Structures are given as C-alpha cells and as structure tokens.
Image 1 (cartoon, rainbow, N blue to C red):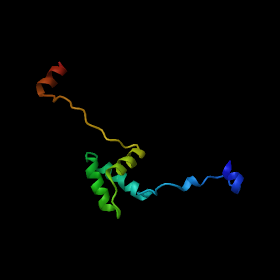
Image 2: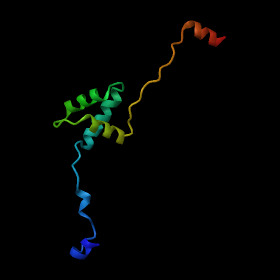
Image 3: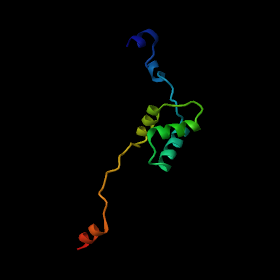
Image 4: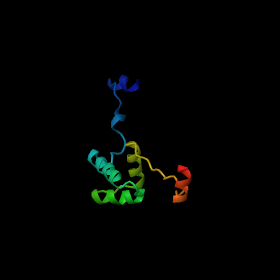
Length: 93
C-alpha cells in the first residue's frame, strides 16, 4: 500500500530480484541427456562431465537441484539373491 500511495505502482520490484540462473534451458537439456545416457554415474561424475561442456563450472548441488526439478532422482539398486540352477529347478517343481 505504501508503494501505491507514494508512486502509484501496483507491481512490486521483487519479481526480478535474486541471482540469475547458472544453467540455460539448453544446458538443462544437455544435463538430462547425459543422465539418460549414463544412468549409473554418480553425482560427482555427472558434474564433472557437465562442467566439461560449460564455460562457467557449476557445483554438484546445482546439478542435483536441476535434476530434481526435472524429476530425476538418485536411486540405489535393491540387492537380490542370486538364483542358481538348483533354485530355478526347485521353483519350477
């Protein structure tokens, strides 16, 4: 209300505040393509590969944040017991 009373503005200047994004839309697509091709890489390996494509390096946390925004999350494979020939035979019987 005070900004409206003083200047007659109804919009806030805060919509343009904050640090600019480190990754462009094209960089985000490159990142998702790298993750899709090499699914078993760790976050540090993905970060180093992305940084080789960029002029300004980014942190692993930034990579993780962008991947989460793209609905890509880290997963750990479930350990499963090895099925031997004897187990397979018992199962069929």
